[in-house]
Amino acid sequence: MSKNIIIAIDGYSSSGKSTMARTLAKAVGYRYIDSGAMYRAVTLWALRHNMIEADGTVNSTRLTEALPDININFTTATDDRPQQTLLNGENVEEEIRRLAVSNHVSQVAAIPEVRHHLVRLQQDLGHEKGIVMDGRDIGTTVFPDAEMKIFVDASAEPRAQRRFLELSDKGQAVNYEEVLANVVQRDHIDMTRAESPLRKAADAVSLDNSTMTTEEQDRWLLELFKQRTQCE
Image 1 (cartoon, helix red, strand yellow):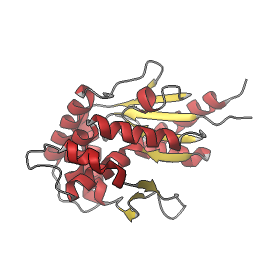
Image 2 (cartoon, helix red, strand yellow):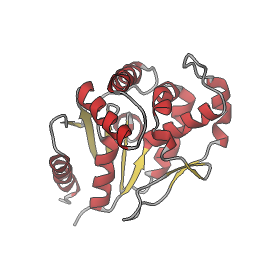
Image 3 (cartoon, rainbow, N blue to C red):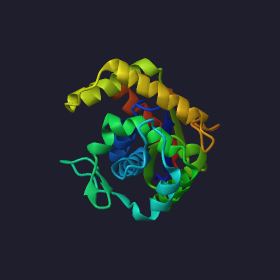
Image 4 (cartoon, rainbow, N blue to C red):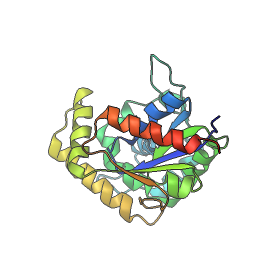
């Protein structure tokens, strides 16, 4: 007999966290929560409302004041359609994945008030357990007592290549050098921000998926899940 747990998957940008978390959640019948999509949705709101200057500076005062007006939710995934991110009821899943949002999401995510607001929402979503959530601070800040923690690591180059192919497949006009620069910049901001910086939790299991196939990665995660949910 197994028990419901919270699975926290943290790691660098474009390391495949969301894909592996989504696949694992489907395999074990858990709910998947993409915390990164929540920060991206807030970033999209800020861009739409001219709260980000040309030099990338975010008007944190205006954005903080607007947080109560920003409603973020998710659709339920089906066999025919993956989970979609809703911003005030609008499906913004495709728009939040664009490079324009990627270029500013780390700056928005570094604002303490934004993090505090979204962490509370994320903790509410995991109240009854049985979830897989991925992000930057899930195992350290959002759910420090999560029963299963993964930290996904990979060098910047394969992550940038993965992201480049993903964007290209969606028809977005990007070049590899631009994507790599974005990945490196986001790593620096995520690791050096004062509020909940990206770091590996002491009890997290490291996973370097640089050379792993998707199938190998999924098998590894499922085996760890079985170990963690086995009742004594």
